[in-house]
Amino acid sequence: MASVNVFITLVLVSWLTPLCSSESSKNGDSYVRDACSVTQYRDLCIHSLAPFSNKAKRNPSKWARAGVSVTISEAKTVFEYLLKLNRSNSMRGRDRAVLSDCIECLEDTLDNLHRSLGVLRKLNGMTFNDQMGDVITWMSAALTDEDTCLDGFDDKEEINQVNLLQNRVTNMTCITSNALALVNKLATTGPENQTDP
Ligand SMILES: *[C@@H]1O[C@H](CO)[C@@H](O)[C@H](O)[C@H]1NC(C)=O
Ligand SMILES: *[C@@H]1O[C@H](CO)[C@@H](O)[C@H](O)[C@H]1NC(C)=O
Ligand SMILES: *[C@@H]1O[C@H](CO)[C@@H](O)[C@H](O)[C@H]1NC(C)=O
Image (cartoon, rainbow, N blue to C red; front, side, top):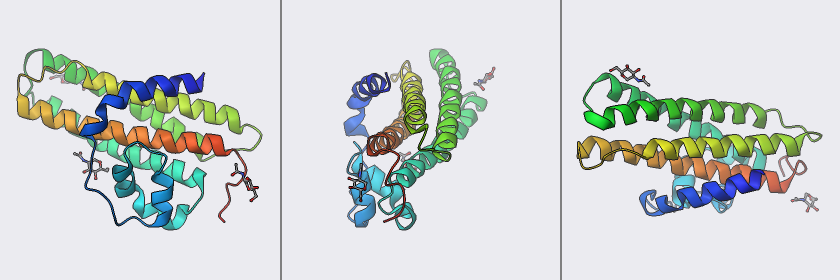
């Protein structure tokens, strides 16, 4: 069930690949480079997660939490930006309604990310598989909502504003995809080996 979700989600976001590059990160240490090796947008992963290296080291559970935390703060930033854009009344025509829908999708995204982080903080060997199933389902739903937000904007009008918005939401989608990969890595590692080496 969960793995089907993940498969669909990966197909869904695979077109984003060329849009989510960040400057290539040669500066990450071996811990973050190793953790990010399972993600699709590796440079972005190294760039955003490098500050967690000292604490997370080779602990998949800590990396998964770091990935989801970073996703939450990025999603909040984008959410605030969209609210401001909505208040400014600068979008015209169909894009106004699309923006409002997009904001609602991001509210769902934030709910799902917070729920995921809550469970990742309370992992338990006895219920590990069920817990990870929930987290994977919610993270996949978060990605789907972000993708729904990107749909529907008419990029021929208000080209600058819509482009900026799409870039930021796309960036967030890539960060979410990376977090989901870290969560999947944790799910396959299992409840053991979650202590620091
Ligand atoms: C966007 O702004 C309009 C008013 O201009 C408001 O009716 C609508 O609820 C806002 N949408 C969101 C999701 O805040
Ligand atoms: C993408 O997200 C990263 C990590 O939060 C951030 O540093 C970067 O500025 C974002 N880029 C864009 C285009 O929003
Ligand atoms: C967990 O650690 C043990 C002992 O270090 C090792 O034998 C085992 O392969 C590890 N399991 C995973 C899934 O990494």
